[in-house]
Image (cartoon, rainbow, N blue to C red; front, top):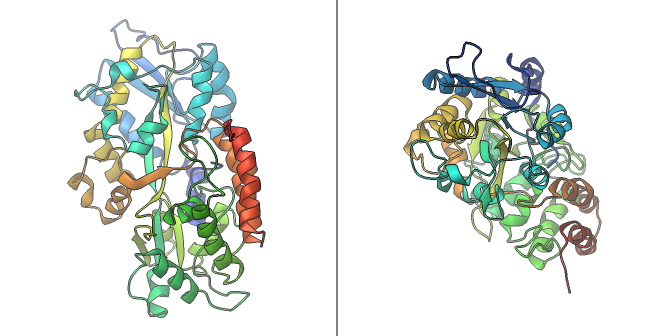
Length: 429
């Protein structure tokens, strides 16, 4: 996954203003040290790349934890993801890094730290007790992605699902009274909302294919296709995938429902400028679109022949293996993923909780409820793949870009499958 978060123009401005590091201890000095006053307080350091306009929400959780746990104080430092990714591997490999960290916006990054024996397994802290990590409440896709060789290595720092954003004004003008609930209606609406022929003045859908949280896999999943199967071998060239991708590539190429080759920021700008009627997006985008004056509607992703499905995204939160205070770090993770903390985070951020058992606690906010409703059937992109980033950048993105521009889907998918199998280690014979 190239980039976890895509934001509209207004939100991008907020990102620039909000990308300030939280004042606190350096992430270099290994594990936390006890308070200088000798009062027995344990100080834990935490490094994160969550520097955007949602940063204050994480700050709020840290403050609430510190207030309710006077003997454990967490200080969080926020730096750009590129900086985190550059320095954290060496720091953790040598035992010099922060006690806690979100190593990357890519869930697959955990494999790098497991390989170097840099991260603490959390199984001893897992359970249903008040001070334990209740991993059974995590979305199944997340728990599976963070469990390697039977051991849990991370908890979700946040949770997001993708839903369908639509412009109510544009729908009404086209005589469409409700968002599409099925893939057939989705396709029909995308065509109807595209105006201007081969050079549209308005697009029915704003799709991105690079530098974005991926949305094309959802279009595959709708029809029962996938990218990689349970046997670690490519399924991108299976009949279901090829059929689904042929349908959507033809809609872009022949019906011009979306521009070709958009980056995530381009797709957001197109929707924000009222030149596209629909977009698949996550909870981070809603505030910006509302502030842009969009008459915004939010609905679940339309259902295809394979049943309800959408894409989930999450950021792993991990503990350094050599921390001096593993019990206190695990206590923090247990609290952070608790019902109380996740309800609070969801209420203030608009993100769904990182738990599937909160129900009415988030239903009072219709927008949050829509994102949360998708948690049980949301899937992570390239989950469990150590080479997920390379598969995305070197294979999947170029593949989608080629079929949007007219490449034969079956031939392109066969070539992509060979590349994927080389990266996954799949043995086809």
